[in-house]
Image (cartoon, rainbow, N blue to C red; front, side):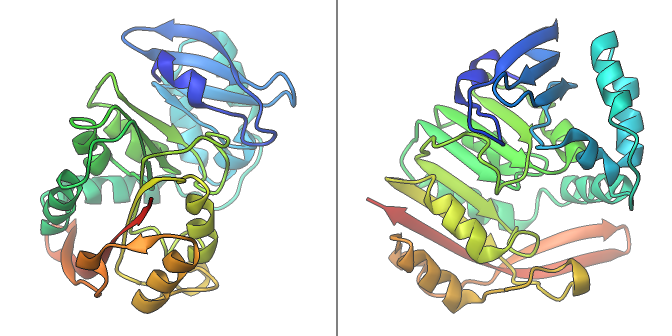
Amino acid sequence: MLQSSLEFLRCVRCGAKLELDVFLSEKEIVEGMLECKKCKLKFPIIHKIPILWDDFANYLSSRRILGGKLYNLVCSPKLKSFVKSSLSKKENDRSNLEEKWSKIYQNSKNSKFYFEVKKNLDALPSSKLVLEHGCSIGITTNHLADSHEMVFGLDRSFSALDIAKKHFKENLDYFVADSLCPVFGKLQFDLVLALNVLEIIEPRVLLKSISKQITKGHFVISDPYDFDRGPNSVKNPINESLLRINLTDLGFNVLSSTKKPSFIPWNLKLNPRTTLNYKVDFVIAQKS
């Protein structure tokens, strides 16, 4: 975690500023603890990544294998004790699934989809504050950091962000967090991205939440509308038309170049013999 990120972060429960206790620091904070003095919540920083979850034990309850890895990663006795005390719950384990998808994104980073996204992003004006929801291994955030002042990425997967953090830049930072939680309080961003996340976060709820993060600026969103995921899918899916209608209702103006649905190829290499081929819709909207 970058020391400079502290000024932007807020408690996800009460919105208060966080205090930082550093245990190990190099170019950035490797191990430490973020604490809300108001509601007493603590958020660990492990392997340079803050885990800004309302209940850390609950986060690990569905990631038991990851919890063991985090325990082995940390050096500080205080942090080891905190991780150990949070390992009491046990549910279905997502650790291997999140590691698997992190590798899939790594193997698929040269997909035409990312080329098209970067090309469109390069045409946008430089921004002071940028946020990407569901940033995964940081393909887009890493690119944005070359031309924007400060870039943040949020994702639920520690495994994905651990890969993203390997590309150190002084204006780029990542956080394990739920996109619907107020990680940054009422902070306003000039550019917000949400690429291919509408199947895992209720679309209308996410759009409304992101709308509050932009008073003046751009919102870039894409999705293949793959909602056929059984019990793991969202309850209220949307399509190309409804996405644009919702954006307009929230005060956005959809750029003319993206008013019509697009079909950008996004090829995900699941293994050496299997590729998942999506056609992704891409939208740029603006508040001015």
